[in-house]
Length: 259
Ligand SMILES: [Zn+2]
Ligand SMILES: [Zn+2]
Image: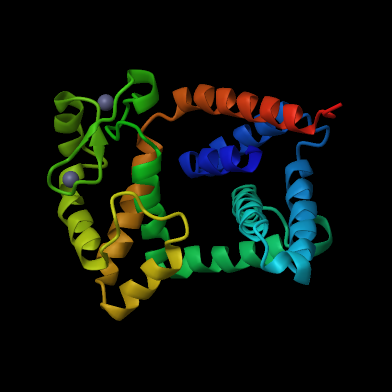
């Protein structure tokens, strides 16, 4: 569960500065003495162990196999995201071959393929569970309700009509400049409002197959970068800390001897 909590957290805090702070806090919560790479060392060792388990013929078809797969996926995603966000060197001894090659591949994609960053944008819009008006920091968790989405694009959520109106005409990141393109991309790709965590590859394939407008993908990706900078993520740190605390307590309980 620790890796699931970390994964959820990472989706919510994708920008590098926040990721760095959270990484330190995550390391503190988990009890690391080496915050610069300890979490990645955990990922590296976990992946090596899980891959050797998955290769055992006796386990391959058993009921444990899906569990091994899930754990593998969580450490793989969390490790790759941390590696990218902390902009760490491509050192396979230190971070393991799986994470380093995945990090390299993703960095290339981020630089060259706007369908990659656009899918991240859709992921972020759904999983952040927040108001997307610049300057507002309201979240579903703190308000105790889900917010309604803009009826034009059906993807961008606001806590109030006032926030929506302000966001529509914002001087730097106006929603009205991107609303139609978000709707176009959602319709053209068929991406659901709640994107699948493993939906990146299908999304990119669909973009190529259906010849989805590259300019719209680029515009949406660029808009999301600006929007993430414009909204306040600060209160989400508290939520992440609570989540991490719960996850690390859970972890300790699991590790305690059952005598
Ligand atoms: Zn809209
Ligand atoms: Zn708001």
